[in-house]
Length: 214
Image (cartoon, rainbow, N blue to C red; front, side, top):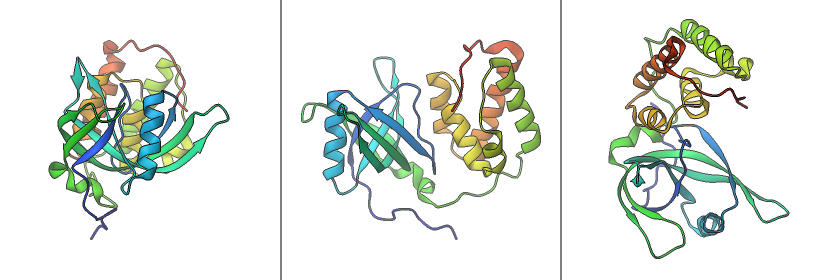
Protein backbone atom coordinates (compact mmCIF):
# COMPACT_ATOMS: atom_id res chain seq x y z
CA UNK A 1 0.00 0.00 0.00
CA UNK A 2 1.29 3.47 -0.84
CA UNK A 3 2.17 5.75 2.03
CA UNK A 4 0.38 9.05 2.50
CA UNK A 5 2.54 12.17 2.33
CA UNK A 6 1.78 14.62 5.12
CA UNK A 7 -1.26 12.70 6.33
CA UNK A 8 -2.48 15.48 8.65
CA UNK A 9 -5.51 17.64 7.84
CA UNK A 10 -5.10 20.34 5.23
CA UNK A 11 -6.31 23.91 5.89
CA UNK A 12 -9.52 25.26 4.39
CA UNK A 13 -7.83 28.55 3.48
CA UNK A 14 -4.41 29.01 1.87
CA UNK A 15 -2.47 31.89 0.28
CA UNK A 16 -2.65 31.96 -3.51
CA UNK A 17 0.10 32.70 -6.02
CA UNK A 18 -1.52 33.28 -9.44
CA UNK A 19 1.05 32.70 -12.19
CA UNK A 20 0.21 31.99 -15.84
CA UNK A 21 2.00 29.00 -17.33
CA UNK A 22 3.13 27.69 -13.93
CA UNK A 23 1.48 24.47 -12.78
CA UNK A 24 2.57 22.14 -10.01
CA UNK A 25 1.77 18.50 -10.61
CA UNK A 26 1.59 15.63 -8.09
CA UNK A 27 4.90 14.47 -6.61
CA UNK A 28 6.96 17.19 -8.34
CA UNK A 29 8.79 20.31 -7.20
CA UNK A 30 8.59 23.87 -8.49
CA UNK A 31 11.35 26.49 -8.05
CA UNK A 32 10.19 30.12 -7.79
CA UNK A 33 11.99 33.45 -7.91
CA UNK A 34 10.03 35.90 -5.73
CA UNK A 35 10.54 39.66 -6.08
CA UNK A 36 7.14 41.42 -5.98
CA UNK A 37 6.55 43.00 -2.54
CA UNK A 38 3.17 41.31 -1.99
CA UNK A 39 4.64 37.88 -2.69
CA UNK A 40 7.70 38.58 -0.56
CA UNK A 41 5.16 39.20 2.22
CA UNK A 42 3.35 35.98 1.28
CA UNK A 43 6.54 33.95 1.68
CA UNK A 44 7.35 35.61 5.02
CA UNK A 45 3.84 34.80 6.28
CA UNK A 46 3.99 31.21 5.00
CA UNK A 47 7.31 30.64 6.77
CA UNK A 48 5.57 31.54 10.05
CA UNK A 49 2.58 29.29 9.38
CA UNK A 50 2.27 25.71 10.54
CA UNK A 51 1.46 24.27 7.11
CA UNK A 52 3.90 26.26 4.89
CA UNK A 53 1.52 25.85 1.92
CA UNK A 54 1.29 28.10 -1.14
CA UNK A 55 -1.50 27.58 -3.66
CA UNK A 56 -0.21 27.80 -7.24
CA UNK A 57 -3.05 28.71 -9.58
CA UNK A 58 -3.28 30.07 -13.12
CA UNK A 59 -5.13 33.28 -14.00
CA UNK A 60 -7.85 32.55 -16.57
CA UNK A 61 -9.60 35.46 -18.24
CA UNK A 62 -10.56 37.98 -15.56
CA UNK A 63 -10.45 35.40 -12.79
CA UNK A 64 -8.64 32.31 -11.62
CA UNK A 65 -8.68 28.70 -12.75
CA UNK A 66 -11.02 26.34 -10.93
CA UNK A 67 -8.18 24.02 -9.90
CA UNK A 68 -4.70 24.69 -8.55
CA UNK A 69 -2.07 22.85 -6.53
CA UNK A 70 -0.80 23.51 -3.03
CA UNK A 71 2.94 23.15 -2.59
CA UNK A 72 4.80 23.02 0.71
CA UNK A 73 7.70 25.46 0.95
CA UNK A 74 10.72 23.19 1.43
CA UNK A 75 13.63 25.44 0.43
CA UNK A 76 14.16 29.13 1.06
CA UNK A 77 17.06 31.49 0.46
CA UNK A 78 17.37 35.26 0.24
CA UNK A 79 19.54 37.14 -2.24
CA UNK A 80 21.64 40.18 -1.37
CA UNK A 81 19.03 42.48 -2.92
CA UNK A 82 16.14 41.05 -0.90
CA UNK A 83 14.62 38.63 -3.40
CA UNK A 84 13.61 35.12 -2.37
CA UNK A 85 14.46 31.84 -4.06
CA UNK A 86 12.08 29.11 -2.93
CA UNK A 87 11.13 25.57 -3.85
CA UNK A 88 7.67 24.05 -3.45
CA UNK A 89 6.95 20.34 -3.13
CA UNK A 90 3.51 19.37 -4.42
CA UNK A 91 1.11 18.28 -1.68
CA UNK A 92 -2.31 18.19 -3.34
CA UNK A 93 -4.43 19.76 -6.00
CA UNK A 94 -7.43 21.72 -4.78
CA UNK A 95 -10.65 23.17 -6.12
CA UNK A 96 -10.97 26.90 -5.52
CA UNK A 97 -14.23 27.58 -3.70
CA UNK A 98 -13.75 31.35 -3.64
CA UNK A 99 -10.90 33.86 -3.51
CA UNK A 100 -10.56 36.00 -0.38
CA UNK A 101 -9.35 39.59 -0.67
CA UNK A 102 -8.63 42.38 1.75
CA UNK A 103 -6.87 40.85 4.75
CA UNK A 104 -3.42 40.57 3.16
CA UNK A 105 -1.65 42.25 0.20
CA UNK A 106 -1.92 38.91 -1.65
CA UNK A 107 -4.93 36.76 -2.44
CA UNK A 108 -6.02 33.90 -0.26
CA UNK A 109 -8.48 31.22 -1.24
CA UNK A 110 -11.05 29.00 0.40
CA UNK A 111 -10.29 25.59 -1.08
CA UNK A 112 -11.69 22.07 -1.24
CA UNK A 113 -9.34 19.06 -1.31
CA UNK A 114 -12.01 16.36 -1.71
CA UNK A 115 -11.38 15.32 -5.31
CA UNK A 116 -7.60 14.88 -4.99
CA UNK A 117 -6.93 12.43 -2.17
CA UNK A 118 -4.68 10.36 -4.43
CA UNK A 119 -2.25 13.26 -4.80
CA UNK A 120 -0.99 12.67 -1.28
CA UNK A 121 0.07 9.08 -1.91
CA UNK A 122 3.80 8.49 -2.24
CA UNK A 123 3.28 6.63 -5.53
CA UNK A 124 0.56 5.98 -8.09
CA UNK A 125 -0.58 2.94 -10.08
CA UNK A 126 1.41 2.25 -13.24
CA UNK A 127 0.18 3.29 -16.67
CA UNK A 128 0.13 -0.05 -18.54
CA UNK A 129 -0.88 1.58 -21.83
CA UNK A 130 2.22 3.78 -21.92
CA UNK A 131 4.38 3.02 -24.98
CA UNK A 132 7.40 4.80 -23.57
CA UNK A 133 9.81 4.30 -26.51
CA UNK A 134 7.26 5.72 -28.96
CA UNK A 135 6.57 8.63 -26.61
CA UNK A 136 10.28 9.43 -26.21
CA UNK A 137 10.74 9.29 -29.99
CA UNK A 138 7.83 11.68 -30.51
CA UNK A 139 9.17 13.98 -27.81
CA UNK A 140 12.58 13.97 -29.51
CA UNK A 141 11.05 15.05 -32.83
CA UNK A 142 9.06 17.78 -31.06
CA UNK A 143 12.15 19.11 -29.29
CA UNK A 144 14.27 19.00 -32.43
CA UNK A 145 11.69 20.86 -34.53
CA UNK A 146 11.55 23.66 -31.93
CA UNK A 147 15.24 23.87 -31.17
CA UNK A 148 14.61 22.82 -27.58
CA UNK A 149 17.05 20.93 -25.43
CA UNK A 150 16.72 18.85 -22.29
CA UNK A 151 18.65 16.38 -20.17
CA UNK A 152 17.94 13.15 -22.03
CA UNK A 153 19.78 11.04 -19.45
CA UNK A 154 17.49 12.37 -16.74
CA UNK A 155 14.46 11.77 -18.96
CA UNK A 156 15.48 8.15 -19.54
CA UNK A 157 16.03 7.55 -15.82
CA UNK A 158 12.79 9.23 -14.63
CA UNK A 159 9.86 7.00 -13.77
CA UNK A 160 6.74 7.32 -15.92
CA UNK A 161 4.90 9.75 -13.67
CA UNK A 162 7.88 12.02 -13.09
CA UNK A 163 8.58 12.10 -16.84
CA UNK A 164 5.00 12.96 -17.82
CA UNK A 165 4.42 15.44 -14.99
CA UNK A 166 7.75 17.22 -15.46
CA UNK A 167 7.17 17.60 -19.20
CA UNK A 168 3.65 18.89 -18.55
CA UNK A 169 5.18 21.59 -16.36
CA UNK A 170 8.21 22.48 -18.51
CA UNK A 171 7.12 22.28 -22.14
CA UNK A 172 6.12 25.62 -23.74
CA UNK A 173 2.39 24.95 -23.80
CA UNK A 174 -0.46 27.42 -23.49
CA UNK A 175 -2.29 28.25 -20.26
CA UNK A 176 -5.37 26.24 -21.27
CA UNK A 177 -3.29 23.22 -22.27
CA UNK A 178 -1.36 23.27 -19.00
CA UNK A 179 -4.58 23.61 -17.06
CA UNK A 180 -6.10 20.63 -18.84
CA UNK A 181 -2.99 18.56 -18.03
CA UNK A 182 -3.19 19.66 -14.39
CA UNK A 183 -6.84 18.65 -14.13
CA UNK A 184 -6.37 15.23 -15.78
CA UNK A 185 -7.75 12.72 -13.27
CA UNK A 186 -4.84 10.27 -13.39
CA UNK A 187 -1.47 9.56 -14.95
CA UNK A 188 -2.86 7.59 -17.91
CA UNK A 189 -5.20 10.45 -18.85
CA UNK A 190 -2.45 13.05 -18.51
CA UNK A 191 0.01 10.97 -20.54
CA UNK A 192 -2.55 10.43 -23.32
CA UNK A 193 -3.36 14.14 -23.37
CA UNK A 194 0.31 15.17 -23.48
CA UNK A 195 1.03 12.61 -26.20
CA UNK A 196 -1.86 14.05 -28.20
CA UNK A 197 -0.54 17.60 -27.79
CA UNK A 198 2.88 16.51 -29.06
CA UNK A 199 1.32 14.74 -32.03
CA UNK A 200 -0.85 17.76 -32.81
CA UNK A 201 2.16 20.07 -32.64
CA UNK A 202 4.17 17.81 -34.95
CA UNK A 203 1.39 18.05 -37.52
CA UNK A 204 1.63 21.84 -37.59
CA UNK A 205 -0.86 22.76 -34.91
CA UNK A 206 1.66 24.66 -32.80
CA UNK A 207 4.03 27.45 -33.76
CA UNK A 208 5.80 28.09 -30.49
CA UNK A 209 8.97 30.18 -30.57
CA UNK A 210 12.22 28.35 -30.07
CA UNK A 211 13.59 28.30 -26.54
CA UNK A 212 15.69 26.12 -24.30
CA UNK A 213 14.36 24.01 -21.46
CA UNK A 214 16.61 23.71 -18.45
